[in-house]
Amino acid sequence: QSQEFPPQTQMELQTVEDRGWKPGSTLLVINVSPLEYGHILFIPDPALCLPQILTQDLIQLGIESVLLSAHRGFRVGFNSLGGFASVNHLHLHGFYLDHELFIESAHSEPLCLDINFHLLSGFPARGFLFYSDGRDLETVAKNICKATNYLVTKDIAHNVFVTRGILAGDKIDSRSSARIRIIIWPRKSCFGAKEESAFNVALCELSGHLPIKTVEDFHSITEASAIAIIQKYLLPDVEFSQLTSQLIALLTI
Image (cartoon, rainbow, N blue to C red):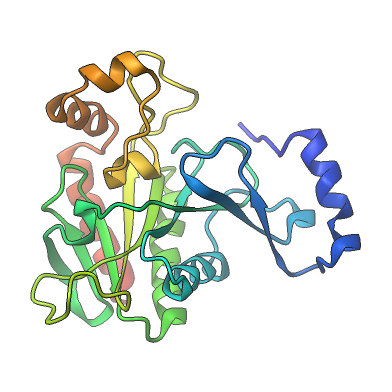
């Protein structure tokens, strides 16, 4: 279902040019429903009302923002339609999380070494991983969007998460700020909140950061029950295996 920003937000966007914003720029706005400290939205050329389909320029901007941030806990992410995107208007999330996540170092298996494309296998939420040392980000962003555009053509919802991290075998400090992991999770589509769950499954939750809805759920949830909720929204094994082969073929053309 197509949905745009609320009318009051649209009016605000119409006036930002008077405050120094110019067409072709990316607007940074404060998220009125923050999940974490400093939660912002990157909105490229808002007057164009672009659909919520990831673009090469936007994901490259997100990766560069993570690399440029002096705070190692700055993360960026994307929810597609069907992946708990709140509106059908192109935007990227950015926020600070002052905790190390397991996903920063979880085991991965190489699928296409030439382009640093991996299978994220040592993690409860299986997905695809691009890895970068900060060089040739244009090519990295292009390959990411090749994968996400393919998911769009197949009507497969997805979430994307950008964080600092390392690969097994890296001879660098795990706290280094010079390495980036970009994870893509293809997943089952879901529209609207699922009240029976302690949390909704979107980019934060798939990465291992769980904003819990109620105090009661916070005190009662276990690791096993959290993993069970997350894995309900992942693709079945056969479909995921087929998709893996299709993406390898696509990215090695």
